[in-house]
Amino acid sequence: MNISQVSDRTGLPPKTIRYYEEIGLITPDRGANGYRDFSDQHLHKLAFIGRARALGFSIEECRILLALYEDDTRASADVKAIARQHLEHINEKIEQLQSMADTLGHLIDCCAGDNRPDCPILNDLARH
Amino acid sequence: MNISQVSDRTGLPPKTIRYYEEIGLITPDRGANGYRDFSDQHLHKLAFIGRARALGFSIEECRILLALYEDDTRASADVKAIARQHLEHINEKIEQLQSMADTLGHLIDCCAGDNRPDCPILNDLARH
DNA sequence: CCTTGACCTTCCAGTCACTGGAACCCTTAT
DNA sequence: ATAAGGGTTCCAGTGACTGGAAGGTCAAGG
Image 1 (tube, rainbow over the protein chains, first blue to last red):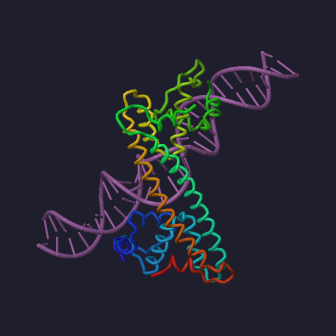
Image 2: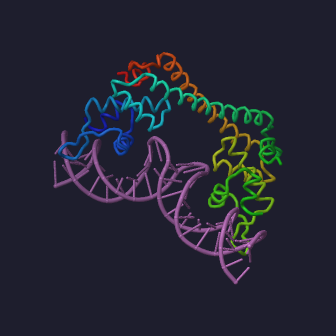
Image 3: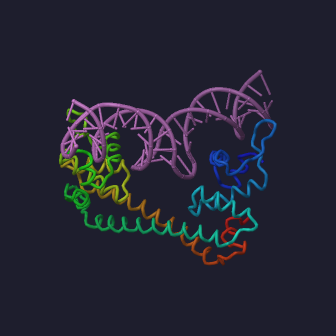
């Protein structure tokens, strides 16, 4: 399978797929012309990575998840631990963003948004 | 004022302050020894930037906000527009993260987390 | 005067996960 | 023969810093 077919089927851009090879996540075969030749297994792995990335896992976490996936003797506890840790990370980020949004929303509400220069948003940023 | 004092007073690391100079956000004077010499105004500007960054504004947005701050003839509408746009951006991010968290939370709940290899998290990532 | 330690300086490289672009090769159809 | 549309590599850039090396400066103590 050529790279553009894999791209179509996984939704990952060709550039990203080449990058994943570069960092050792996959190692497709090569045809006589030097073109990458992907098997169904490669496709499957890339789709796996794509979904893990869509859940926000880092590349290194994807690497670990892939390794666990390919290890028949894994303990589901190991997977769960990684997922939990990642979820916690996400929740922290949400909290941070929510706090920013709250502050910002308040400032926006206080700002007249007219032609005059007086602005509570700038006043807040410039507070002493 | 030396850089470490500015760092202490603004909470920004010296490296970051040097970086802000490099990209033209501030231009402190220089002493005879080559050391940066910050005025109160520089301090004030850096604190402004620090607070804007803490609200998640990008460097380029900070640059614009600073320019508006220093422009007596600004319209508060311009500031409000930038803030609104940024808030929207934050809210989009929160939604994305929340959606990830929801999916991930569900998968985690479904996973036994024991010594056995069977794992709904991996099954989901590997789904066809 | 010398040394020590804490400053300061610049410059280069690395982070993360791609993404864009240039230059060039290969395949297929006309 | 040629043109379009694949594929390849390699280099550079993104954002906002951060770490580290190599070296200059300053103030205090012996």
